[in-house]
Image (cartoon, rainbow, N blue to C red; front, side):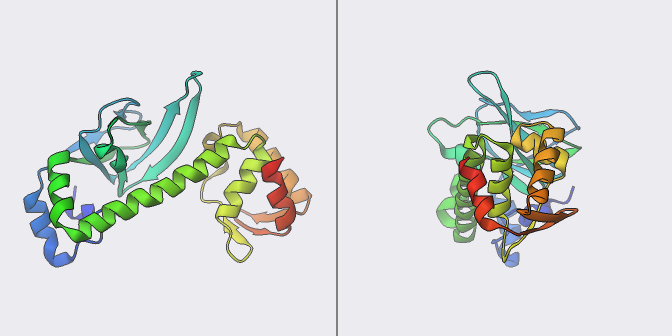
Length: 221
């Protein structure tokens, strides 16, 4: 483990190089290792420390009131896990976090984080920006969950990632199917139909939106 990799995490990356040693000296932290398939946190666990994924990747999932398991996201290191809930009135993990491979997690207690937020402006900005970006992600996730058809989910996913008519599917089809909560054959069939209908073109993971009007209509169907 290289603790300096902590500063590659969005929450900490704004801290200037000449202040990083001071930051490490001022905080208390511990490192925990998890093997593939292990639970790092379970939905409902109390968040008493800032969890920073230093190495590896994890998946997050949520159990709905009906008992359905919803796959929320795949998170790659270096990254923070649920930092906003550290200071929430109901400070519990909203999702379960499961290691997809061997992972190293840095845990920084709430007291240390509070101290940095009160006198370390660079850390404060990074912490606030990260949480703001997560709110945007969650709003996108909510739109996907509320969209009923697979084509609609694909359209929503593609549009968010489209710039100048070009987009990149940043997940493999198996991962994307899990993200949408559908089967891979169903996802593949919907994607093929969108290509056959001239809505998009796709070569491996890179695509072009050919008919944005039709693509947008898929969301509201």
